[in-house]
Amino acid sequence: MRPFEFLEPANLAEACQLISRYKDRAKLIAGGQSLLPILKQRMISPEYLISIKNLHELEYIKQNSSGIEIGALTTHHAIEISPLIKEKFPILAEMENSLGSIQIRNWGTIGGNLCHADPAGDPGVVLLALKASVMTNSIRGNREIPLDSFFVSYMETALEPDEILTEIHIPYPVPHTGFSYVKESVRFGERPIASAAAAISIKGKNIKEARIYLGAAGNTPKRAVKAEKYYNTGAGKFPEAASQAASDEAEPGSDLEGTKEYKKQIIKVIVKRALSQAIAQAQAGSTGDTR
Amino acid sequence: MKKYLELTVNGEAREAYVEPWWTLQDVLRREFGLFGVKSGCETGHCGSCTILIDGKAVKSCLVLALQVKDKKITTIEGLASKDNLHPLQKSFLEHFAFQCGFCTPGMILTAKAMLDENPRPTEEEVKRALNGNLCRCTGYVKIIEAILAVGDKQ
Image (cartoon, rainbow over all chains, first blue to last red; front, side, top):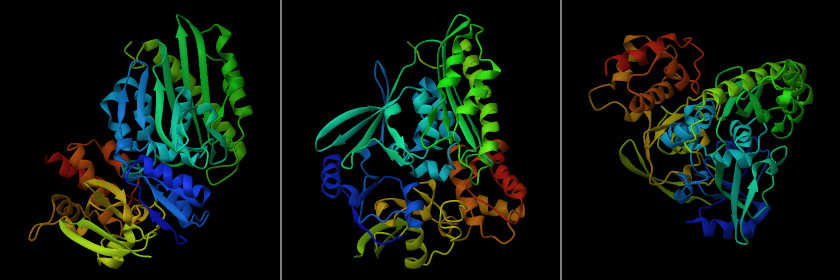
């Protein structure tokens, strides 16, 4: 790593002051499980690292009447084992269990992962399917950003240079909504060849709403809008053409996880699986929300 | 410019002056001579640098040293008591669960942290828990057997 200065604010307000002073000359570091590898590769060389890892006021998982709030510094492992998450949003616990390895999950944070904005990231696609939004703080005030406006480009978010991500909001789903996350990787836990998250809401035999997001299939998590449109075929399931459409609209790159052509074939298979798993869960009525 | 760092390592209060960009791996090895913390890939893939922070397995090559003041660090050197090996160490010996031994400290510490949270894991749970620790010698079979054997005794 190239040399940098290490600043450790005592609380969130101090952290906002520091990032406002240094802006693009600084990077915020939480667990560093995404940041340290790229610093070691010298892809970036910030003059200052502002450590927010010990701002324990941002580590929490809470519920209110409309949904769940997760503090940005909550570790992946805390989410994985949280009884509240397992009850209300088991798909999140499942997703976290497939993220990296236990060591990464013990030190890395959900907020850090989202701000790193890797399109292959596990939390991004699942939280998008869950209609999540994020809260940010700065010395100028707070704001809420819907997650589907958050990922702007490859490893780039909608955060201003002086903003800190503080919280993730996940609204309770409407009744009879099922979720799934299908991740295909060479070894369990590793970077996906392709991934798909689905949220399907049903009413009787009909599908009322579908959200499908693809990971590692573009510069950002990609919503499979053409595939979603097949929901109203009235048969209570998606035709083959839907997963083909998802494959066609995906834009994966060729890399160590596979060629573009191979990935597109995998996407077709995993979208089909994600859709049928989400529908099955919706029909079983076991999404976890207890309204 | 170096900064003062206080931390607890294997039950002892330790201190060092560290550059901001030094990782916990750097400090444990170079400042404290704890070479049971291995240096393999230095990029968070191989797991040979695994240590415990407050009882939880973490890859020390991906931790900035200055972030762990007031935390309790355990390395493989801290596992055995004066005259007794830890049950996991005994089990690895009995099951011939190492060849070159390079991955072994990381494997044992990850296993210890897992057993502390889940004392009677299934084989699948052991395999998943170890997916951050690579071994190039053994093919993992004996490692998994050694860990399951400790689980069975609990």
